[in-house]
Image (cartoon, rainbow, N blue to C red; front, side):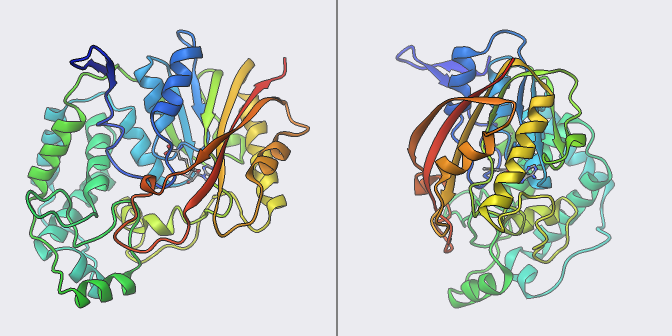
Length: 372
Ligand SMILES: C[S@@+](CC[C@H](N)C(=O)[O-])C[C@H]1O[C@@H](n2cnc3c(N)ncnc32)[C@H](O)[C@@H]1O
């Protein structure tokens, strides 16, 4: 039921599916899991309007609660949808085989220095076949799970023993910019590995779906949470556990450009940042957040709890606590507590292989309730 017993008799969370694909500034599963475990009642629905990789949705699933997620980044939505997939490793592996059987020649394979150095020719060819098959049809839970497994394995470090990733040396968490990556690989004479995609998928599917996970109910939707029209939920929610983009962190799409390409985006870095909260000034950002809280209120039950983990990144001089407090002022939400949650550890970013400029700093946890 999403947890297994250790030798000491302590309950251990099943985190394999949660780790299907890394994402920026994800919060630890324990954070939403413990809140929902301690305070939520049976049947209460949970919402995350900045779902990211779907940690809150997965925590709700482990607690047997219906979960809804919204995110404007298609990469986040694809990963979140896998957190709610009711499937098995066998079905995922079969979905992979079916696509490869049906799509034998890709219509389009990206060309150029980056692509030649990032992936072995045969690996890229097979990736394009899987990409086209999934773009054509990604309806079933098995295909949604497969898609997230492929996204998770798309880029990462070269392993000395069994390969786990499809790419040449890369960070796992974000995709390197092409010119930088090509220079990096050439300088070190790093060549893209000729990996067996199917066996990597098999191993990852068996890991993610090894334990029986509680049956999920809910949806992860792509949308701009600043718009009321994005909040079409089947049920009013009693819990909102979320973490908005940290102030100054606005590169979710360009940093995930390779995964976005796999989902149908361009084969070059996409800097458009469509439907992300604007970071042009604190006021503009705060107004965007206020709008999201107001939309949340419109789908919340009276007494609903809003729990927000929020921070800022190093190169922006703001007081995140003040910013989050202001975003809740004159809203339907009544602030209950605001606590310092400590500092985000660098390990969470896992961006060790290439340089990263935006390490998170102080984080705060805010609890508010919907005024009755
Ligand atoms: C801090 S991350 C959430 C991480 C999440 N808690 C997790 O554990 O994976 C913030 C998310 O907000 C999303 N986002 C930013 N602006 C948005 C908007 N206007 N509407 C919906 N999602 C948005 C980003 O794409 C990003 O995935």
